[in-house]
Image 1: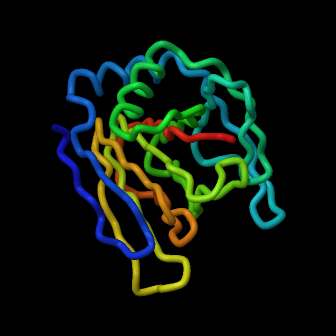
Image 2 (image 1 turned 180 degrees about the horizontal axis):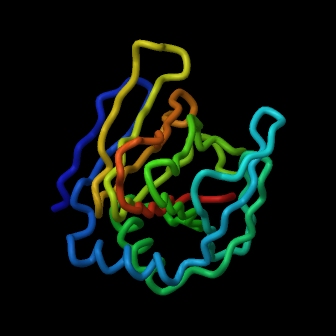
Length: 195
């Protein structure tokens, strides 16, 4: 049975599985995705200004539908066998059929993901986001949109899975902040359903 930690935060349904993948399997997937994923660095528009996205990304899907966020539209490639293996494991646990996987490669501590919610229209109301972490552990921050006293920090470990569902995206923002520490690379896979 998977070890499971449910975060006790209001207006949310967030569950963390620290040992979702065993160490040899997590090591294998990290190495293979680093080499075989079609990584790209896009420009994003934030508050009218255009920036290089501070990480590399890639999109894979089984239905060909693009995914848009921050005035950026990504066209997916077909799932690889390795991505399908992880997707099946996530689906077995979540009982949800995921259509897309958005991958992020954080090359060092300066690569980051700013405060945001995964609340694009294409994800529908109360989406489920299943995030698998590989490689360097990173700090993950959550803050409530209307109650400044409500916030949470945690470490996302190599081989872990974080599932956010229910009202989480409606009420919470999350980020992977920059760090000045000298750290290694992290890959994360965010499985989602695009209507």
